[in-house]
Length: 184
Length: 88
Image 1 (cartoon, rainbow over the protein chains, first blue to last red):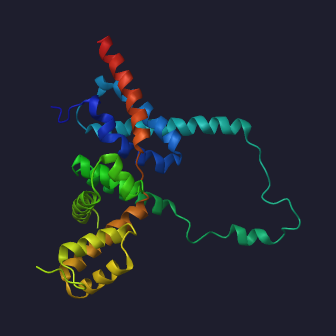
Image 2 (cartoon, rainbow over the protein chains, first blue to last red; image 1 turned 90 degrees about the vertical axis):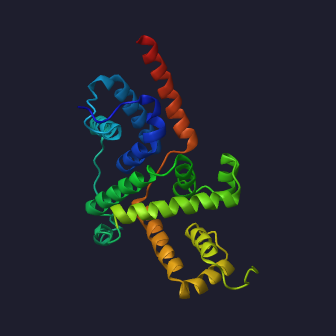
């Protein structure tokens, strides 16, 4: 028996930020990430009949998004392959000897393992943000993730600065507790 | 009750602690918070958890859509949704 229902009316509100965070860590371009999310929602809409309700809507949308990201890379790689110009690492004789230093691995460079861990951490943070009341989540994202200043948020949401700090405090307390339970 | 010049209560300390996470606390506020942290384990525990949360968010480099970006996606999707509902 299906455990999950499907309701596309709330997809953008509920899942767009989660999908965006998932995508941006993989494609590193805001425009492309937005296009892929739009395509995912449209593909989901077209294949709603295939939703069996065994997984949550979000998991189902992520599975569509994963395919979209793979298709995106397939597409750019096939285009790039045609136009690629191969160049030597260094052609200048003046720079002889510099290459060794330049090619030494940067110890602060992220390894694949770091990237994976950060991406899982990002998912855990979003799981916790999703549990917040809508207003708290909105204020928290604007202040913490988008880095908007207090005045901008207050003007946009028509709240006072002290109201904002109360909301931020509640959101941070709930998030810290949730992360403590699920991650730390 | 008269408000102390130097000693703050737990709620005020937590409020300053939140502001510290966003770099919005003044030096004087940070000073008062540090005094409270020296003797109040509740504030200390809140401060530790709060800093840990900030570190995690920075480490994960969490991103989200701006309002105008979300609206654009929503408008496109709503148009498609309306089309689909008309066809059925």
